[in-house]
Length: 304
Image 1 (cartoon, rainbow, N blue to C red):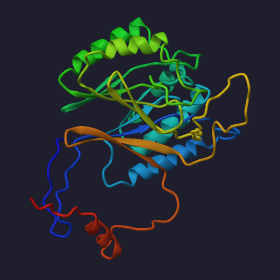
Image 2 (image 1 turned 180 degrees about the horizontal axis):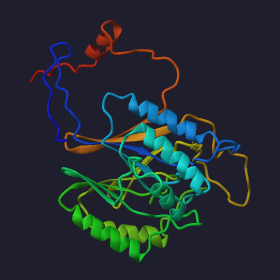
Image 3 (image 1 turned 120 degrees about the vertical axis):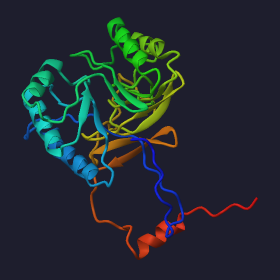
Image 4 (image 1 turned 90 degrees about the vertical axis):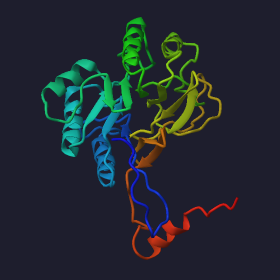
C-alpha cells in the first residue's frame, strides 16, 4: 500500500499519486429494528452510505466504526448492523460508544464469524497504524478513561512508536461549542487521556464521533476530526445554552447520512467528509464537459 506515482497523463498534464492508506469512518449509526419512530430507518441510512463508498473507484482498506452502533445496545440491532456490514464485503472494525453494550455486541459477532470484522485494538498497514481505545462507560453517556484503559493505550502506542498512527475513540476530548453535548475539558478522563498521549509524536490524528456533526480541532497538539453521523445529524447552533431554560432550538434534525474518509497523501493524513449520494449527477468525468473541467483545474506554470 505504499504510494506509487502513476504515469503522467498527456490529457490532464499532472502526476496522479496513489494513496497509501484509505480508511472510511462511520459513526453514530443508532441502528434499531424497523418500526422505531426515530431510529427505525437507520439501517437503510447505513446501507446508503455503504453503497456510496462501494461506488468509489478506490475502496477503503478498512472501515472503522466509532461507536453508538445500536440505539438501545440490544442484540437484535447488532445483528441487523452486522448483516449489513457482511453484505458490503469490506473489512471493518469498531470501538463502542455510550449507547452500546459490549456483551450484546460481542455475542452478535460470535454468531457471524465471516462478517468481515477485524478484531483487535491495533491494525497495521505497512508504515501506518490504527489504534482503537474505549471511552464508553455504560450506561452513562459521558466519556470515561480510567487507569486501566490508559495503561492499555500506552502499551498499544508503544507498539506503534515507529509508525504514523491514527487513534480512534468515540467521545471527542475537545469542546466544539455545542453546550448541550460538549465535555468538560477539566474532566478526569480527558486529563488522563492527555497524559497518555504526551510525547506520542507518532499519533498524527485522533478520530471520533458522538456529537453527530463534522468538526475539527486539536488536543495536546494532535489534530482531531469528528465524524458526522449515519443517524440524523446534529444542529450546529453555537450560541450559549442555558441547561435550566429550554429555548426551543433544534438539537437533532433531518439530513443525509454522512461519513469520513481518512487518507495518507504526501506523507500526511487528510480527511474528506461526504454524505450518501442522492439526486442526479450534474457533472461527470466524461469526454466532453467533464474533461474540460478537469483540464481547467490544472495550475499554471509559475515563471521564475
